Image 1 (spheres, protein in one colour):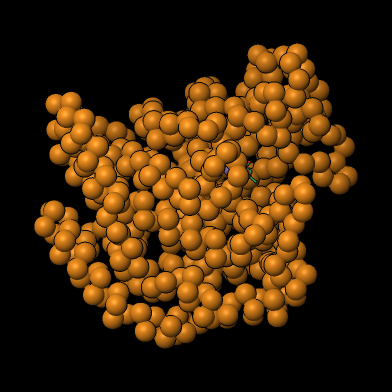
Image 2: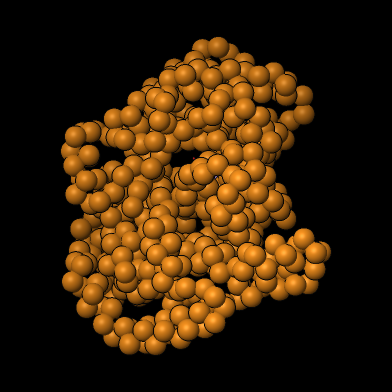
Length: 426
Ligand code: LRH
Ligand code: MN
Ligand code: MN
């Protein structure tokens, strides 16, 4: 399916136009003191993980519209990510959710990953659904449950994920808790926090020294009165309690409308506790829209904080794990992932164009308009030729979605996997 040669052939008709636009932008940026090839190099190096659960149609509780050709096994999910990575060179790892993605044959999986040039990014535990044959229900919480036996079951499940992670070389264990309450008085708020902290400590102890625990927060859903880890402050305090291997995970959809996410990013960077990102787009909350589709300026401002922190010599260098976390009902999920990566790379490229010295000067002298204009200058630059050049240099497609369509990938997947194939997951 879609060989490297085919990708190059499909690039051919676009190449002349691309070179013209890239050349023009290179000259334009040089006038501003920016070296386009340096930016491209950073884009080529940037990688964003693909979650196994984004490869199939998601649906809502009201309905699902399967597209056909969805991956039916972990092996097929890895095949899909390998394809995305060949198209854009920016998605060289996959995140797994247990038990949706229990590995059956670990050596075979390792071999497939090696051959496809992929790694496992993170293992994600699932205590938000009851599984068949599970002795205790998570109806009233998992790591925060009032019953010791339920907490123990949830801890054990997380430790199992850590074990799979060790076998597969994953360096991240991500915990998102659905725990919370639906009615005032239902849960003792302080005790629920305390129980969660203690449960997390048992999981933390089971992690090897080169693994990071990412703690994800979310203010609502599936519970609508309170959640045990509603905000970055709670995640941060749990990390402080656990130790240096615990870090905060920011999921863009897990904020109340109009939250200043870029400021949260800046704060966490300042504290050395920003461990990872889940990218998606949000209009109302956790809507899983395509990254950058509704608030591109916000995405740029987030990257502006990240780039600023990366260039700050006073801050310790700390890796941030980037992942897309979305699930769609109306789009081809693979096309959506290609679009998402493109938005992410575009926002990153724009952040790299910001004249940081001038911005610093404007901020220090309280020149409000100049500071804002410097950001707008970068944001309003059409960086698409830089992103396309990064794809090209990585051996990918100049226009990944166009090549995906021209190569009739979905049609072939439907032929191989059937019209009714359904991916496991959300
Ligand atoms: C929760 C969440 C979390 C889960 C994923 C399926 O809303 O963002 O990251 O693991 O969705
Ligand atoms: Mn998430
Ligand atoms: Mn979410």
